[in-house]
Image (cartoon, rainbow, N blue to C red; front, side, top):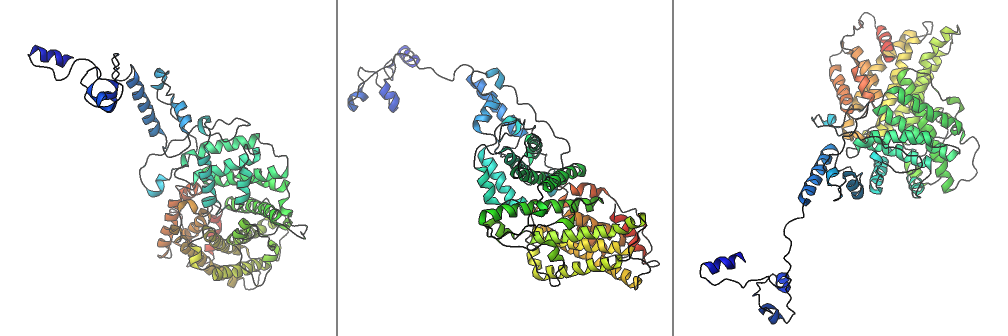
Amino acid sequence: MASATKAAANGKPPRQNPGPACQQCRIRKLRCDRQKPCGGCVDSGVSCHTDSTPPQRGPKRGHLKVLRSRIAALEQRMVEQDPGAGLFTPAASESQFNLDDNSISDSTAPPPPPSVMENSPPEEAGIVGLPLAAPPQLPPCGFIPGQSYVGPAGLPIPALTRADLDQLFFDRVNIFLPMIQQYRYFKRSRPAPTSPSHTCLQYAMWTIASALSSQFHHLRDALYHDTLERLGHSPAEDDASRLEHAQAWIIIAVYEFMQAPFQRAWISVGRAIRLVQLMRLNEIDKVADIEVDHGVFIEKEERRRTFWMAFCLDRCSCVLEGLSLTLNEQEIYTRLPSSEDVFQSGAPVTMPFLSEVLTETDPNIMSPFAESIIFTTLWGRSFIHQRQPAAEHVFSNASRDFCERQLWLDDILTRRIQKLQQDYVAASVKVDSMLLYTSMIAQTTALLLCKAAESIPPTTPSNHDLVSRYQRRAPAAAKEIVRLAQYLPHFSFFKIHPFTPIPLFLCRQFLFVLRGHDDSLADDLNVIGDALQELKGVNGLCQSRLDIDFSEVELPDLQESPEAIMDFFGNYMAT
């Protein structure tokens, strides 16, 4: 209209007739001649209709303000939380950000900052040495009894996130916690809702899986606290629920060894052991089975593996801190676990008892998990053997068979180490973190026997020769641990056995003893130190161990007193 008026004022005919264009020309985006009917509609043979109501132009009042507030809220949220976590559904996110058009004033407020959990270990950014900002810790999950799969801020955990965490557990955690049969677990997880005890187990699995994942790492504290809440509210009235509770406490204990102080992990280990004892899992095979089908074998094998995991946790934690062992090896009537392939396939096999394996003159090699149990048992026996003279001295009941027991343990350990090295070559150790950890524990047991050699009675025949023999063997065992530590770069940080720092630390102690008398040990110390430093980002066991500094220790003169190495080594093994 303005152009037509301007053209009339200039004395020129307008380019188009006044008035609105018809609806058909608007839709087809054609120039309308404003006739009744217009030429375009006549040519097309359609009805020409003109809407005299002028169309509304531009956005509605306040609409741009709403859009800006939504964008600001989303940007703030993306900065404060990992956008790839996949924890929130679109509907949940929209309700969380309050993006309803009827609530414009509320949508402009940024979301509250997440709270930071206490005792949070360093993030994996420290692993690669990059100054990355640590992802924020999410608030506690707000556990509500009877409600399942609730994540941080009370939002539901989507099915895809749960599936991701399940797969992470079986890909990364099951390597060193092989006590859950995958098919049986997924079958029990299908019903909705699951039983309270199974939900506890799921949350425990998701907790440790998130701790070993860069994508879900920031969820670990929230899932951990929710797991503890659920374990506290979930009843354990039958063996099935007690088994899942025991498995959950074992998983939580391993998580706490990696992420929390030792005392907290020790308490969780004790809870798992009490449940194992209550179910008498140490007597699973006390009565021989005549015939075992597929389902019964899987169930019993899972119970066996749960017991042996509790057994290994008991040995590792007690020996590490010099505490008394809880489970009595003399009362075990449970067979060793089968191989992982057999366990997952469910094909029934009969495995030997631990006592049978330790008395074999020609040992047969078994799966890495079974071998780790055997060497952990020898580690525990050597620990008890080393402490026995002190206890006998208190009760004035000195034993004369100390040297015989020392040689008997040494003979068993030597034969099994030789068999392990023959059947599992270096190429196998480089691809199996459980096998690498087992090989390190074997050499750590040798170091502990060398420490125990200082208690051989002076009246023992050939005492000097025995002590000299162990003085030569201890450096060889330490060198072997250094060699095995060089295989760690073959593994992802997330797939290394969580107790690997234990043999590394004990080896580091011994190398500090000898560093002033052997220049070549400086490189070995660097290898162990670098390995512990790299694992520090994902494993809390390295934290307190790396803080111990031996650089100011005054070493004994080994040239004047060769026996002093055993005394010095004995003092620092108990640090």
